Amino acid sequence: NIWPTTFWNLAHTAVITDTGFVTAGGSASFLVDVQIPGALTPGDWDIANITAISQNGTANDTAMTFTQVLAPFLLVDDDGGINCEQWYDQAFVGNGLAYNYWDTAWGTPTAAFMDGYQAVVWTTGDSSGGGGTLGVPEDTLSLAERTEIENFLNNNGKMYMSSGGLGWDGEFNGWAPWISTWFGANAFNGGTGGAVDIFGVPGDPVGNGLNLQMHSGDYCPALNGLWTWNNLVGPTTWASFQDAGANNMATRIIGSKAVYTAFDLADVNGPGNRTTLLKRILDWLLFPYAVDLTPDTQEFAADAGDTVIYPMEVWNLGDVVDTYDLSLDAFIWPTTIMNETAAVPIIATGLMNPGTSFNFT
Image (cartoon, rainbow, N blue to C red; front, side):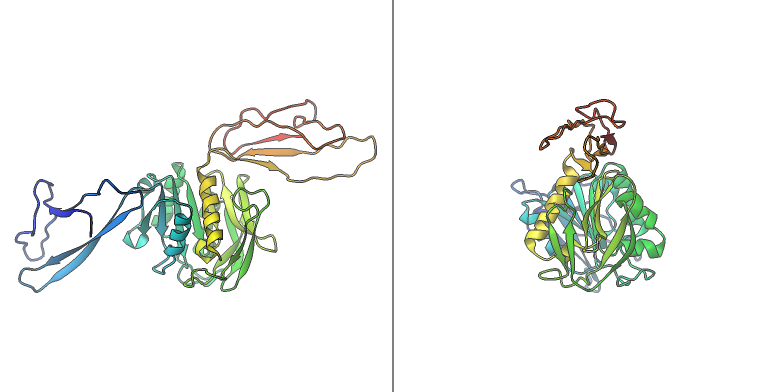
């Protein structure tokens, strides 16, 4: 304990040093007053260990307070007691980002508490049991945790869920639709214990050009390498990473502005990779403007003199109403951007609400 810390009566009107007489089976309430110094930075913290000792020397008990300077981000440590949080700390520090820490052993963080942060990073580490077999239980998110996460996301909160066992848990325990609703994914297979190469989806703001090796190198050795393949659910969900078989292993969903990696960030090899992955995820969660033009590539063969019409779709993946200018380059043959029915030339989409798309040719 470094920060000034004192005991006060419950009315916070006087400093105290003892409880006074307490009857058998009774209790005495008091306050612990922690003064946070002014010359600190977001994320700084202090611990105070509190001891209650009977004056007759026959009984004692201890408690702890953990006080932090409010930071932009919150790391929720829900890994069941293993030590993987240092891999997240390295990624935050590597990006120069301050964060606060919450261990679910202290209780479930409420939606109101999480609302105070720009974004929340929630890691389940290695869930207990299961071992990566559908039909065998995992222990990732309790009902209380799911309720608070749902309320947080429903109130425009932004979250990165880092969990290899989430899909297994939802499938076995009957709450897979919850994962589909809030993270746009539905687990159908996966595994554990072996090194896996993961490839960023070209053009994706999180995955583009970022190829990862999981469960190898300097990953957190307490992890068992649990991972999940996922079907994408809903029109506003995009894949950020896939394995060599093009199975989806990470999703972005605009509806709840959430990112879900079906592997743990601490299971990724290389501090540079973990730092970059966290930075890209937080950037996408926080940046209000984002766009996706699809499909990325089209080709067609036709007779000389024919006209080829390519259908296109642009999505507003941001948080605000936006409009997008449409233009062409690198063409020789006469090429025009037209409306959806190829009847009228256009140069812009017009105003688009978040999570909506615009079709053109």
